[in-house]
Image (cartoon, rainbow, N blue to C red; front, top):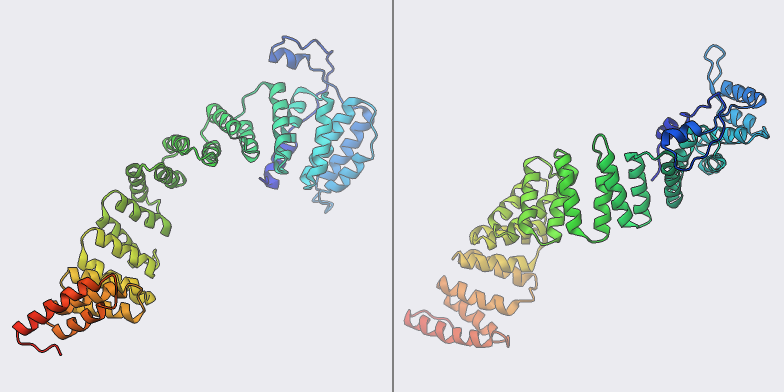
Length: 426
């Protein structure tokens, strides 16, 4: 996770040094307010203070003189100092660290900020600030355990419940694949947030998914929808989690609600919706869903999508519609199997001429089901009174061991029928 320069800049210069000196007191068993009051607060030595003032001049652009800010010069000036007081060392180190961070040199920034934090001598607010900045810089550099350690130092020092801190810790734990701690910190981020934010819900959901705990993922996603009902990014995952747990009814209802709200926008959304209609015993809606979005252009008019649509019409016993759709799919890809299926369904619809045309195309494109097609052609030609053609296909059917008995039965039946009707088949 890389933070933008803007975000980092916003946290760099919030610390200032106070100007009074208090004696150190025992910290044991003290309240937070007592600890703050007991914290020694120092000022910079005069020599260091002057150099810092000079550095500030480098950091301040002057339009009248045509001078731009020069943070590199400020860094060089401050790096030349060799302070003796611990406070001066800490204050200069955190200031230089912030300048390095502004310049994008995060390794040096981390080193300087950590040095200042470890000295543990800055004013209360400054000390808290360096702990938090150290955590943010480590997170920026994907140093996740160091991020957690710095935030733990910050919490031990401040005893504050900051939802952003918990959210950052949840992210760090997630990257370390420590999913239980991810969930724990995400829950704390949700608990202490003044206004709900999506990030902790997302991290918690991802932690459950990575553990293949889809019931947990359903729970957190459902909670997120209650908080962010108009945010479309939760609806599709929830439907998919229901699908993974084989709760097809809830998966379908979630997809339908998402469609009503206009959240379905991708081709896969509608192919999944169609599949769910089919799985819930509503194949006709599956078919018309596919048909509608193929016609709109959202779904590509290819053999796969047309074949799926035909299959749904078939499941819905819309045989003529299914046959025509299979035929359209077959023509797109010269698919022998789709031609065969269209032939079967034209036969069911008693449209034998169309069935014969589809079967012949299936044979033309070298269908591996030649035997069953020949048997189907026997019946189609017979029902049209084409006894000679029916007889020819019955003879062809004798070549198939699987269909030999059926073909043989047809031979005698065709012959008897033709003789009775005084039609020559030779």
